[in-house]
Image 1 (cartoon, rainbow, N blue to C red):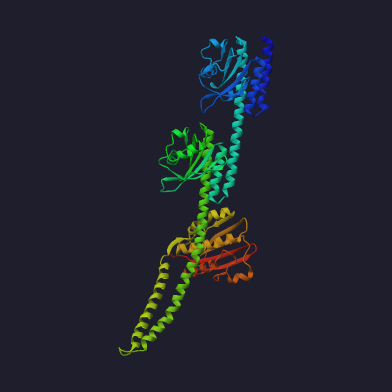
Image 2 (tube, one colour):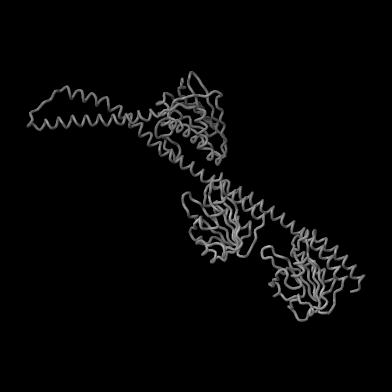
Length: 565
């Protein structure tokens, strides 16, 4: 092509290459378009653009013109051949006659001249543009100048497209993290959370396999709890020793760990899974909550891969998000376990109180029977069988009296467990036990303590049981979102606890019976909660009453004597 015409064509190509930023977002399509422009201007027999892969540090063919499809799989080490030399030294090169060039690697016998220009971004070579010709001395200095000009503009365009692509990828990753956070924030089943975290981690890093290992205190083994591949769950292989595995190092050091070549690094029993799934590189992030180890999240690739800082940050964020969700689910399950235990203990508490009352009622007539029996003055000859009967009757009366005394003594021991405490502090401690349950049910709690401390002398566990009963009853009465209001007050040296909810209320015909034992309107209820609460408060020289109840809500109030010390 004539010099003037070539320069004019090159200017047109520069403009078209520059406009690629607005015409396409795919770097691969842009590279092919750039190569087509280079071919149109310089008219070589064949041309190619090769990029240096960060993972392998080798030149891989990205796009080509006039080359066989089989060449797509060819790789060149940096420094190998004309293309490799250009990449290594970062300088353009013209070879008029390849047969006289010792650096030339003959892939095709009909090629006679070649030209290569490095693609440089801020002083770093990222690839090479290469053109070949079947004619000797086909390229001159003007050709080199034009190719350099087009390559520089192409590099600028490609790096900007990569930046756009990376920004979009980060935005998608951030959106995925936000969506995952919303999805698992309300999830109560830990198994579903494990599944979601592992699936999302595999998608975010586009990894071959993702695994979630759980840590159990005092157990040297890490449970490979779940392993997700591109086609779904995989056989996880059981457990691995955290002291003999690279995965365990992430947990011990409390930091993210990267391994680029697993088959030559990992020597634990995990090696079997590595070989089976063809795992090559790994990124492992500890799952921590307040420095408490929960487990390790691992992403694996089936090719040599160096994880970027962005990938590490996303992965670390995902593991932190997972730690919060897992911990919340575990705490929530503990709340439900505590509530279930409370409901079971209600029956035992009632049984204990009933036993004490029965023993108290039995003791009086038993005392009368014993006095009357002793006053009868019965005496029979030693050979009379009735004398033996008198001894047995006396022994059994004494035995019954002993049993009654033991039951009453047990009740008095519980009363002796009273301690002096602040009512407001006791309420605050109780609210901590149910905060997760209230959050999950979207129930707002409003606690307004009295400014001055309310000192009471009580069995803290029993009074806390009364508070929990009233709070849990309020949550059952509220359908959907609602509020619970708690306040304290004093009246005539009595410390008062007032609780009001926005629930559906108690039917008017049932309000007079609510403190009766075994009265309940819920299938899962025992009907003992309020009855036990009343017994506990009366045992503490206090009481409880229903202040008000309507379809707009219910208010209960209980009071206890204030401690004078």
